[in-house]
Image (cartoon, rainbow, N blue to C red; front, side, top):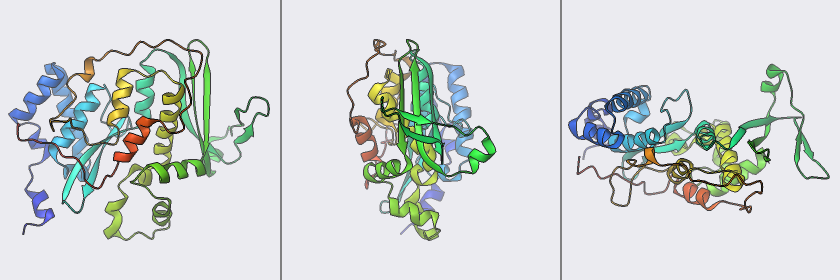
Length: 310
């Protein structure tokens, strides 16, 4: 029987697959701009080349995720952190596929495009910076440490996200790190508190490291920032079509109901016209979009893309 490593070794490299006529036709038909198609091909080939783990993924899932990112006008550059293509290994089925994971900087980019925000940001809160809630308004209070070197050396105790509309409406959301840990442990099947503690303590053997591919393990703070923005914007913010599309496909292997590669029409989608409301939308303890997204993350059976038409 052919081993999984031999199967992976026999797969053509992504840099080869993306230059084939079928893949180029798909890219050109999706982007409908020769210059943009050439730029996209170069940028995604470069992004894959510097990530050995991503090179093992099914080429179709890489391309599908990258086209979704391109249709949202987000960069695949890991340095920019707008979105990532994350290898997802199913050891039982001996498959490796790429998941589209939106970075917190991607959330900020998509939100700002609505033209409704004067300011929007998310940050970690260090020990001593959270001053509790205002007794009259119930709003979180902070006293930030000005010396960056001193601040960076302190442990993180929580996360804060905020926005301000052009009309002056402001909203601030604060979660303690303990609350974020409980949230991740509850809603992300790819993460467990005990697993995270074992990983930090160096108790995970190398043979088991494939189980810890979730970004919650790799970069807890960045995932926490993304969660804060998702909570803040989905409850009180203005959401564009691009933002809704990103929420729908975040942490999933990109496909449609027919198993075909998608992302053709997202690039031309216009923002939904929403009134610049000064009143927050009704609070939802756990937005349905987030439940759906996180419930799919690291599912036992990863979804595949049918490449028979290519």
